[in-house]
Length: 111
Image (cartoon, rainbow, N blue to C red; front, side):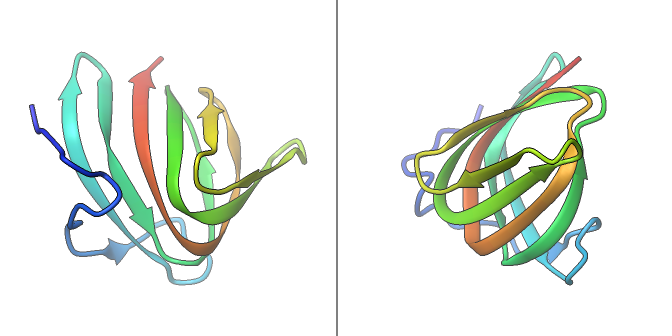
């Protein structure tokens, strides 16, 4: 178990290329805990656009800083900013457009 004093300011691991980025973004993930098909941590991503598919797991995330627009495959648009909470169920597909470096706390649960 990892204890975290402040998810807003914790130093993140070095950023790496985001595999699904359409614009060359980099991301960083600080995994805090994993057990029994669940995981939680802090994630940060640079501005740009990437595609995402939630295949075999659900994700719940709380946005700490930055902003983004999510567009689901069905056309539904969601604006995210500090304090936003979003649930992406198994099977969700869409595009994230990150406007300002985005930091979130996430929980994923295998389905």
